[in-house]
Image (tube, rainbow, N blue to C red; front, top):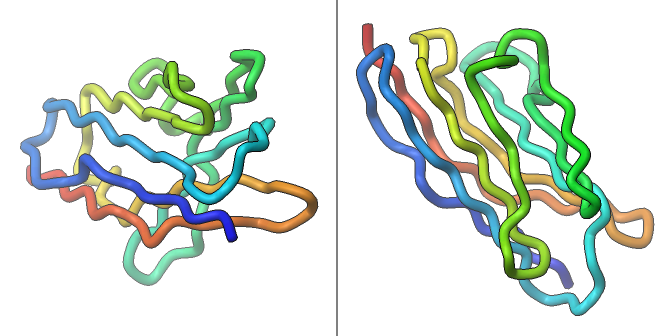
Length: 115
């Protein structure tokens, strides 16, 4: 069973930065695409960023130019560097990766940006 574990959330002032990390445990296979989602209170979960094992990336328009997603040196690790944070970035951030047709989710890490 694949388990994703996020870390790095916290409270930061607007304009500040945070770096989220996610590591997958329980598999020796490479998860081709890993994603960061977020869910703010009362809103649907939205896709924030994607990175493939080959290094290709994709971002939601709302975070382009501010967030950077990358794969770590260890297999199945992913980072999300978040700069110029805004209060509207406040949400629980989730790591996701699909392996053999099964979606795997972490429990999430809270990011709170104060104005």
